[in-house]
Length: 233
Image (cartoon, rainbow, N blue to C red; front, side):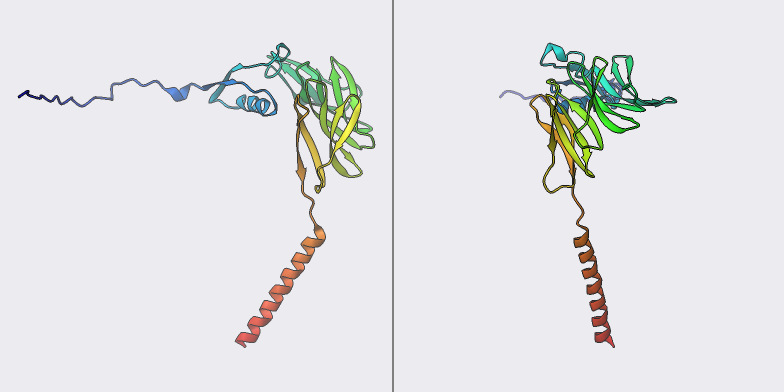
């Protein structure tokens, strides 16, 4: 008969084992998509200390340095509100000539910038091509904002006509209004290279219906109160 021996291992002392502090280093992120969702994710990564953007896949040479390298926005100082474009650590102010305020809202792969500005006549959208400015304003609108521009130079934005907020699509010098049926306002925030537009709507409040519901509720409460009095008196 073959003897079977057993070995009992000594308990492992884990107190002396050195463990790397994985939580001290940020998680390294490689971003692949750079469309509307991808661009939003890149912006959010910049606000996270536990995540670090280490790479970005670009689908064409024109996108290199732009999809995450250039940022547009606005800033205020003692002279007013101004737009800006940031590339790396370099900031360049954007001011529409004659404007009291300028806000940059979007940039495409070619460096074309869109946004809005105000002057003594109102609020308008603008297109900035190498510091050459073109006003974008829907016909008949009292206010317009250019919010996003794709690689083809097509613009999505919003404008106010007859007291109603509408989205718009701008291409080749022509405006097409975007009005989602059944809603009292429509805003277009972004457009991609497939001419797909995203935005938001707001639902109208039916005041007569709300008032009828309120009156019906009050009448029901009054009837219930009278019924209780009749039962318990």
